[in-house]
Length: 171
Ligand SMILES: CC(C)(COP(=O)(O)OP(=O)(O)OC[C@H]1O[C@@H](n2cnc3c(N)ncnc32)[C@H](O)[C@@H]1OP(=O)(O)O)[C@@H](O)C(=O)NCCC(=O)NCCS
Image 1 (cartoon, helix red, strand yellow):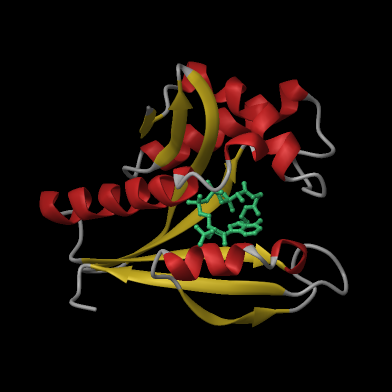
Image 2: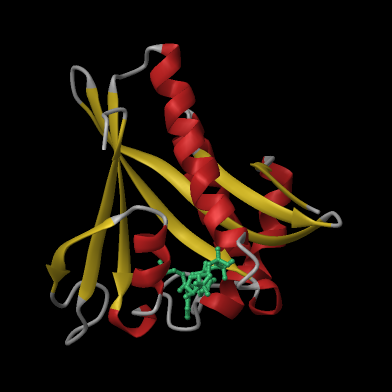
């Protein structure tokens, strides 16, 4: 039985092997030491939590098998914009809807913040590097729409696909 919930700061280290396996070309997860990675994650988690976001984790029999980071990038009068980053599920547990449930939990979090009155609408955005192109299908199945591409974004010569989903309006 998969449990999806917000991460405690002390649980973030358990995500490091998940990210190292999933993001072998990533600027942070490939190159940095575990100590640097945990420092980055703890700061990102604390910064995001101040706005109601943070890391969300998936646990299977108490083992952390996936996660993502939900982080606010803009707050207007009634509209907010959020980034969903570092989405990953351990390879041996993929294709069991865990990734989709993580995205749904992030969306649910935004719905809760809307109900609380923090804002009326929220736009969630993700970027997918060309090398992870298959993930575009994954996001489209979760209702994200392809909005465009960016060139030379993470690495020279590599495009990035931009996808988004607006929450709080009738689709
Ligand atoms: C993307 C990822 C998080 C999906 O996790 P998951 O638990 O397997 O996702 P789900 O089981 O909910 O959904 C799987 C669906 O997405 C599609 N999909 C997602 N990622 C895919 C990939 N890398 N290759 C092929 N198909 C993929 C599949 O078509 C599958 O669809 P189906 O159910 O019709 O077969 C996981 O594949 C992963 O960690 N990949 C490596 C990191 C990555 O690419 N992250 C996203 C980039 S930002």
